[in-house]
Image (tube, rainbow, N blue to C red):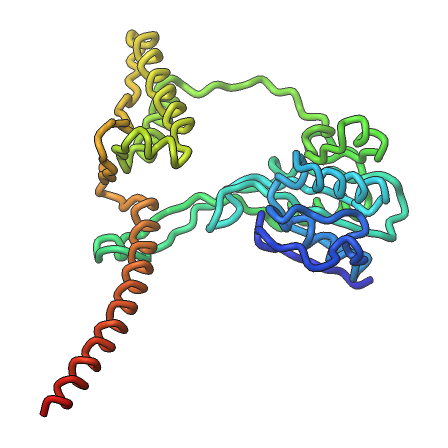
Length: 328
């Protein structure tokens, strides 16, 4: 049986083709122009009976009306064979969690296999040399933690796909009727029975260390911004959350001061009524990713304007030379 296997661009905008509703691939519905995730799925299933897609978890619980209708139809037509939820940090380019959706229009049962692979992964530390910036940055080797599925985990998932069965904390065979009762939500953890284990809390010292590490990463860049500009850019809700986080750290410092807890309470964003937009690098030992991204965008914009400027300068030079020759 021919199969489509795809890891398409996530949440990509697209344009509806002419007469989209009359095209065979969109018989189950036309996905919204704001997101092409389901357009990729429907296009593949119009050409092949089987398809495997790696997509962000938003496809499992979408609130979009068009996507909900398509997802419902795919389930009720018994096209969906399995959903495999993967943890975050499985890609070097993005940390978002994803899921494998396996479709089979010729499947022999009316059940859907749900798998949660969180407990099957192992963490690896990968090294990468800095790509952008000064020599001190490009000569530095950075370490990044990545989740990977070892061979034994892949074999275990393969065995579940070959012979679907329930395994506590890992897999569950779910009927379409049960999925209907849960509002067609396809998140595996909604259905899988999790192991009940005693929660082992980290020490206050360890928690403080981790919280300060995160705070240090957040505070690598400090922003001072005009209040109206922040509002126009839609930043005020985030700024409010950051301020609330700082206040929460202050309260925890007071509550646990006798335990030696000392959380960072430095402000990350300052709102001002003056016409100010200022970005300050506060952590020079590691060039913040935000600054690297900004530098690359600035470089592209400046190259564009410089090329455009040179074009006009050359044209101006030609005009001046032409006038000069006419005077001779």
